[in-house]
Image (cartoon, rainbow, N blue to C red):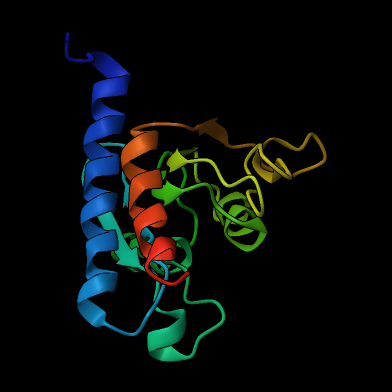
Length: 159
């Protein structure tokens, strides 16, 4: 099988970094859903990385995306993350999609689609809503099966 080139190869590399972050959830042992995220700057440098900590920190906003965006903002010294890419293992929810728009991220790349709560094309499409002050490019389904398998294994152990 041929290796992807160009943008797809770069996106796969970044999703693998997000998958590595998701592995941190398991290490925490608090029972959080294993979702990982990274924010990549326009130059390809990772500015923020995080995984879910809602259970571990009793924080309803403790989603990987929000935490990675915060870390990137600190790294840049600005809340405006123009030209940056948010990369996450699961399609962002409404809160995280809203944070993506409000932080002025240029692109969101994710692995698995979320047909129950996804807000980047599945249930809602907040980043591309024509009424939004800022529109975000959305690239979904990158390493989709690997990302989905991580979640299927997690939820399979709880049923």
